[in-house]
Image (cartoon, rainbow, N blue to C red; front, side, top):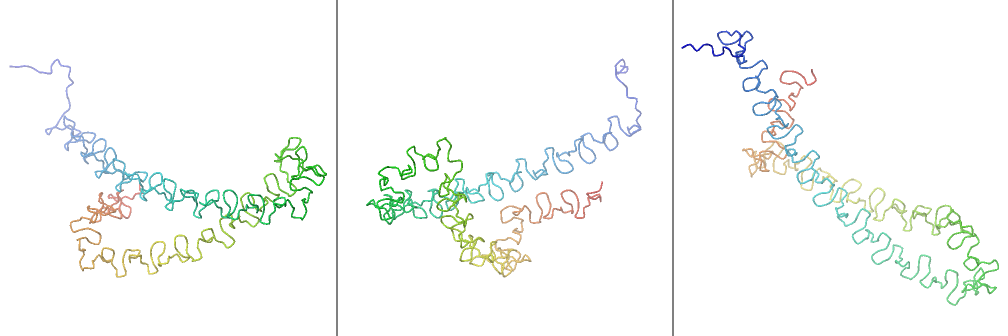
Length: 444
């Protein structure tokens, strides 16, 4: 039975391409659009991969490009070009800012600058005190410095370095001006020069201005012949300079206009050279540059020593600095700040290269990798690099602490110099700068 052409009367465009006996047209493609090698005009096979095994986006069947990275930028090892895994940490466990999952950097400090024990690089704890118990101002929790004085200059007994108590008197009962609580000096006279018998130190009952103990003048008046009382104020309360006790003139001007009294001191108690009556400036230093305790602005006395006995070079009388090292850079035991003695060995007997005076490292291996027992392995089965014959390191993994296996390669199969077994680095160049095709990195 003739059913006719099934496409007759159908709106179908016929394929007029001419194919040879093998089924390929003049351009070499079959009716499915693939050449003899199975690739279409775009160069991809039926599975969507080119002759090199990569798809249109440049990834192979395993999802990696020709550089070994997936669409998210990670290698099969789990690390991206920057060296971080999908959680944001490198092979050593640190993020882009240099902190591990516990929040500490390689030096052991957190983002706020403190170690796990709570101390920062300056030696101060989060609570504000150093290991010796002092804050940045030099005071302990009780409020005293190393010399035992608080911020007001008093020790725990309430006595200053000069021997004065919080009430302003020393143990003998005198203030800094030499008067006791009753107002008399050690000779029995008050600040006006009168003793308890109301007799003046000049041998009379009147002071040099003619006033007696009670402030009565020789003329039987509270005021002298010039109209001023024993304190120097007239009946209206103004002194000879025209100021009252509050420092104002009759016109209302204040003494703060930088005027000086007869002794040459202003309202703040400083003379024109900037020193008070005790001879100290606003910084507490005298004309020689020393404070009341004998120390200059840098904290050194006339002998060049600070309060702890160290000179300007940082050494005490014994010739050692605060860390216990002398001018030759060594401590009393003969070790320098790096921990090595004159012979170049540390306290454990190893030099900077890690070998003792017999030529063995701490595990018993010499520079040739031979153990003291005469073999290439120690008593625990580890070689000079710390690996067993099976490739297990002392740390329990198949890599040393730097990330290299027994053969000397890391997870990406690059050695310590950065080259793989074929001699190419991570960028695809050999040690001479050429890639596999013989082109240099700087060629175009």
